Image 1 (cartoon, rainbow, N blue to C red):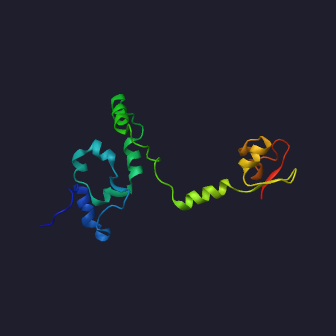
Image 2: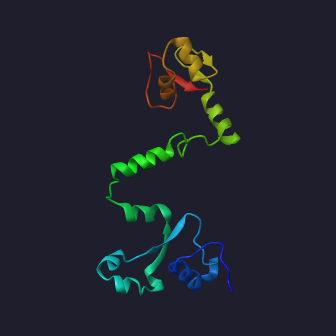
Length: 158
């Protein structure tokens, strides 16, 4: 007798049988999708007699968008979802940055800047901004060629 670590749907068992190359398991982030959803609505009997050709492996995000496109959540569902997420960090927050990312950001922030108008050189756009009383972002924009000047001064990265 074969035992599985979890219960499989009949679709998954068929996929494992016909596509054993990858152990039949979906790649991480992929799910099995039944291609003919209209068949499910119009002919439930035929839908239950599906063929392996009716199944396709697609990314999970695409699968969700296929089944939820144009649907609105009820107020009650939105409130339950909001309550379940209270006190938890957002999906894109709280992830520690890699040391090489931190170093790259630090280097980008500390590019030396030269004022071509008076010849002074500064360790960063922030230092130049403090000296001239200009926003650092404007100095950076001049250095990158987005603006020709700022406060009648021309800057470039040294």
